[in-house]
Image (cartoon, rainbow, N blue to C red; front, top):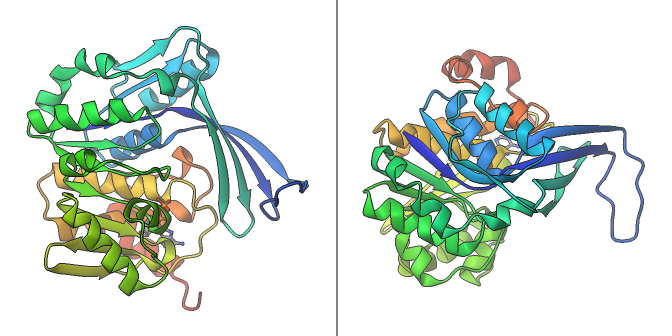
Length: 311
Ligand code: ADP
């Protein structure tokens, strides 16, 4: 079983020819309201990839909250531990997606900011059944820490996807089995530059010294780098045409968790996650772009059709 501790947000998505600069107004082309939030996206992805999945999080007592719960339930996620908080709205994310596929996001966390360590204490039973826990940084840091401690206590493998980028203390690093930053997050966490593969390796090694056991640094269309003590391996991305990179990291992390929960070795888990990430960027949306296990099993045939020779 995979458990996901994290955020549920309603994504308010506008498409536009380009992301506006400060003070600029850009005419967009279309508006959609779709379920999102890093936690919910990762839980939804894990369930679609066939894992028994439980979501631990919070929404407001409002219609958006109900819609988010329903969306997860429809895809098979156990939502019994999604709390409905009084006096706070459901979290929302305002997203602009450029025609190039790049995006810019602002999050108003609402009820996500009211998920407390005490809330998690009441959910300890589910940790006893879990193999892997996935957590991100869209809920309060004390709650993230409490979830990591509870996972450790119950022998659950912990994956921290440190997004959005925030500085972290060393205690957190020592509780994380696998840390999955992108370049920007790695730069902030290590305090080192990350603008070349060599510098990324050095920054990654610095975090290993702070107590993280394994790092997988995601590099968008360049793939990912797996770093452990005395071990570095690049996993190139598949060459596909990205139409929307929203949730690429979420689906990658979920796929990693699903594969590791099945007992697969890390190499296989990263290969699986790289396939899932590639499939996600070829579709629009967050939860709508997440592939089903059946689709990933047909990856080779899919890639024959979707492969792009020149980027
Ligand atoms: P994040 O959204 O957290 O920044 P990334 O954009 O690095 O995460 O994406 C996670 C993974 O998804 C990458 O390591 C890669 O394997 C895959 N991926 C992301 N963007 C692309 C792309 N344009 N083409 C192919 N694969 C991609």
